[in-house]
Image 1 (spheres, rainbow, N blue to C red):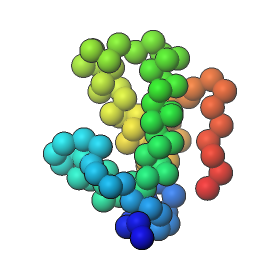
Image 2 (cartoon, rainbow, N blue to C red):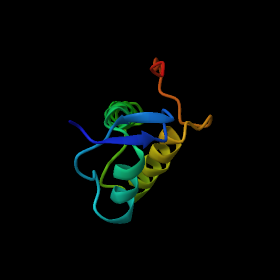
Image 3 (cartoon, rainbow, N blue to C red):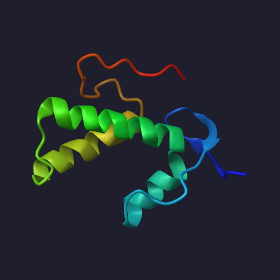
Image 4 (tube, helix red, strand yellow):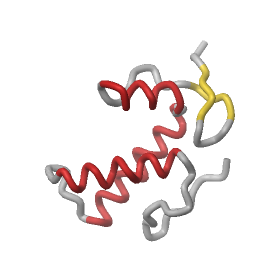
Length: 91
């Protein structure tokens, strides 16, 4: 059986990630508070942001931008950077 966590994006118990997506403190925070479902949705949204905004992932500014947007995404922030045509999934 999969381990469950309380997902901060969906505010309910969902399947947990199996390994941290990043090293260190940020990865530990994500694995403890973000569900597998929310993480997969973030990866899709992140790809759309990279493509639409033509982000250069070698740029520290682009990586910082994505990090900020990731936090907004998981916190259900109203000022999340819009992506043309994106409709958030119903929870």
